[in-house]
Image (cartoon, rainbow, N blue to C red):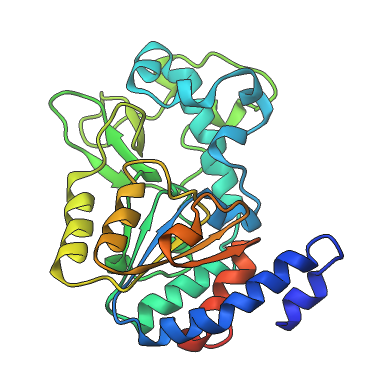
Length: 290
């Protein structure tokens, strides 16, 4: 048993750890022979970094359905509320640090040019772990991308400043404070348009360029292995990537607190537990110790 995992073991999780360890040998054998690898990652990848899931943001947002705050209609109706929600998420993401799983995937990308990560996360932690940008596709955008909403302006830029305006700095997660539109982030290009977070909201399509790059990776040659990390891998459209790898004859390895996928059906591996512990252990033959 890896030393870090042995130290963390308790009677309650010993059975789970032993099951994971039993899977490592066969997984390592297959991993060494895998030429092209795809990773599909979700919120569970960042759990050890201390970030709450989208639906568990807490604070003020316990009184709101987070899914109802992530729509174009919500932004049009109350941009003050939506911006306070996303400002809180930006602040939490900036305070968090990448964990060992982020660094393990980044190292695999540096060592394997035929490795691609599709992230559903918007927290920016993979980029901050120095994951090569050409091998990291953001399916749902980023909290740190800003887009102008003016009809005649196509501004789009990266911004890691926090908070973005003084009124957002004064707002707290304890109570809702209405902020006039003038106090919300505005476009630095046209000077008049209201900025919005560059994330994919419910009802919006995934970025065409990102989907195209992912399709090219899947169709240019067989993908031998897909790593499903911190996500159930069962919700479309993300689940389609799992199906497509399976259809090519590739195998699936799941790293999650909960299984989500039936690994017996997909002829793969399940590593149940903290991705920050198990992803580095699983990838060790290719990346060394992280």
